[in-house]
Image (cartoon, rainbow, N blue to C red; front, side, top):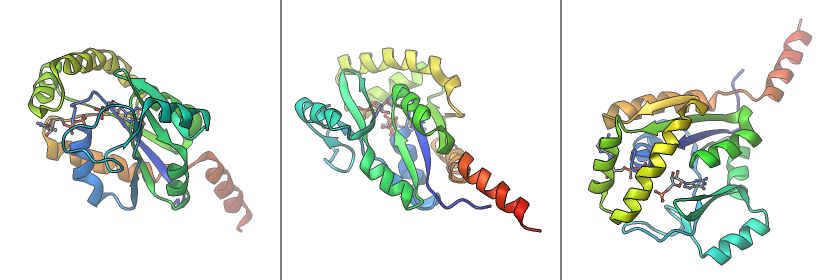
Length: 207
Ligand code: ADP
Ligand code: 5GP
């Protein structure tokens, strides 16, 4: 039985671990994919584009969207709001796409509690805290204060690795991308319970 409905791949991990770099490396190798564009109240970084990297909104706008129940999940991360819009995700799942979320551990929790039977999750990190610090400094997109906040957060996030299906250590980018391609392909094949039940019923009926 090959599944045709959509599936979800959650990617979490400390900021600076290489999630965005890995996503851009794998997108051409994993079939029809929708990368969920989150909404955030954080300031736009240099090189980022509204509607491409995030939907950048004010706190007031974000709170209005919460009230209108437009989010599948949302959380406060590093002092800013981040949320996953429900509408676009629903559409992509209906079209049978693999929907990729780059969300934090709180978001992963929420997605698992609502959609666990179509969700595969991966925690991505650097080989060490030292390497994470290096990458955050080299990326040169955040102030010292923001980097320090991200490092403290990273120490808390890695405590929750066991909640994930897979751990990918992004040491060599090409090798990590290769592993992630395999996981993404398998994620697409995850079968929801309902579909299994239908298959078993049909399988028994055919004689
Ligand atoms: P994230 O999306 O998780 O915040 P990024 O993809 O922005 O992380 O990566 C953070 C920084 O680390 C970037 O400057 C990126 O070029 C660099 N980077 C990503 N993967 C590797 C790697 N395997 N080795 C060295 N540097 C890397
Ligand atoms: P950044 O500011 O570096 O782009 O992202 C900071 C953190 O917010 C990352 O851990 C990222 O995974 C998380 N994040 C981005 N979008 C969302 C979202 O829609 N929901 C949740 N819960 N976390 C998000």
